[in-house]
Image (cartoon, rainbow, N blue to C red; front, side, top):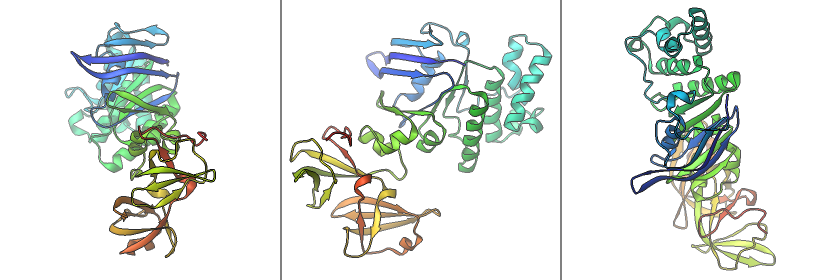
Length: 360
């Protein structure tokens, strides 16, 4: 396996930049997930690592070797595409062994590699079939098996599960995670699905508009989002945001919302009195309170999820959500009261950057 290093990597099409100054060090054996909305540049970055896109600026190194001008076949990287890209006239076994046959490996080596990969992926009963006789999930497993038998320096995954149904995506996520644990392979995985990112990644690279917004473990991005974009993108349902201004009183900071409600942070934030900020709290951290306490909210919509219930609320004109596993809330209607635990509050400055808990 290999480490991958990107230093100020950029990509432009003519005068149109799509990636700007990406710096990322991927350790040997790490599982890195590039996540972000469509058009943010994550697939372009993956294709640049693979050598399928030219690098406009910066340096890309694999195992310490600069590979900017190295052809894809010479980078020793295996890529799993969203579209499977299987040869329709070949059997499963032939598809999986194709790269080894091109390298003129012995039949014993090929059979051993295909057998090991097919066993890991549950493909033994299908080795003689052609792709048209397989389901979408089985085809994706064949594509993964074809990558595994090569024993490359790194695996690249370009939204491999996006064409599968919800249940199969769940199964394949677990399969990919088991495969990574067994192989210890350096992997870079692209997705727009933040659930995939949270469940698979050693570290997440959150991207937006061609730039990296934050790099960290899944829980770092969930617990301490660097800015409003990360806070809103990571988590489902998305984080609630309320605009307000800081008010300093007796060493404790409060946020006065646009509707006049005062929310105490329980700590002092070293920002100017009256500075405009954004208050954030995740729906699962909002607590339904007993009548007469907390903040009054109007119930607009109730969404049962099985696991729990999502309440769509309006707090003095502002949209707001609450998620709870308390099924009694499925009967909620009219006005209810909610509290916002101080330990769960996130504060962002006027530029959308997180104000750290240590910034006191």
